[in-house]
Image (cartoon, rainbow, N blue to C red; front, side, top):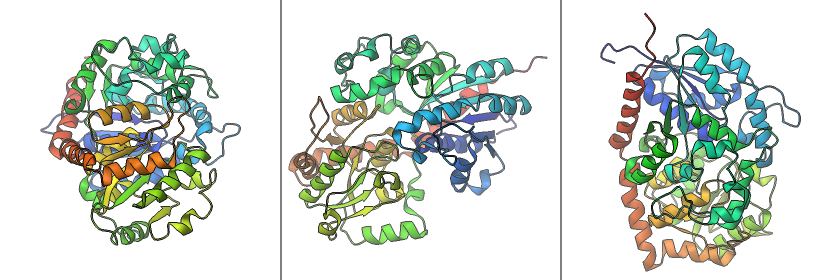
Length: 468
């Protein structure tokens, strides 16, 4: 630290592992600079995250448990979005809002605090921080092109200001994006997404949460880098009239992705080792949203029809809500493996036998896939996934599975044909080559670390100065 003052930084992510893990990665980077981090979440989440903290950083990263209040219809042990069906996530937001007073008491007792880094649902947090003299960072885990679809914060606070009331308005280029772009929703995606603009079971719309969180922050930090989207990062500064600081992509370290002696990984690794380099498609559609039974059926039959080797990570939660086609696992026993439990995604993607990644296009998953140079076969469903797919296809690092733009349906044939393009077709070479090129940006440790260094320097130089 060169005798500089260590900062005390509170980190308060939304209780989804796709949020908690990147927030923890950023915490680890800041702790390496000697800063003290108080990482706040529900107790069970912290137990699940604890092994991810390197021993040398344990003294600098304090895990602060705040139990969620009991909410009717919410299981007592539900502390993360992966613990509940997708439709019940809004009940978790209601419980999360119940942390307002406990968090305020913790902040009051933990002074002095320099900064708090918070997430989109925490619309109630900035006034507390202001009262206590704590500076505020809103950290967006969306990229710039997805964040830009919401427009200025005032638009979001007005629940979309009409833009998000009609699906048709989201299927055309948005007026506040001044340059040519592919940032448009399909009709079926827009229909699902506009619910964000309406109050829900939590009592507060997601659009209002996000807009208030952005409006009331001092700094807008974002999981992105200029090598991917300079124009959008500049646009966000104009839309929100405040500093927008990319913190890099926070990728998993390649060394971590390839190591591990636990039984789960050894079993998976043994299966992957039996396949030649670049021959397996890894299939994972996230841990939160469960596709419909029709979607799962067509996907399964498409994998079978492709005749390609596949490893399908199917979360345990999904297996309670959907069924695989009758006889599918028996028929494909020599072709693929359906893994019905948690799977170490980065380790699988790092394995040489994996040749492509069939993904739902969550931003974290895209980063992991491209980190290891895997071309994407894209099947987006909700939220920003469709926007990510449009942009990734434009960058030629993957192909989107064709589907009906109105209802979102697709067929086993479209799945099989898309896979064959990426794996076998001469036209698929461009996706394989461009994904490898993109990995030079995503997996560039020095480049990505420099973004965190710049962010840390900003926090230090703009810390609150105590009154004399």
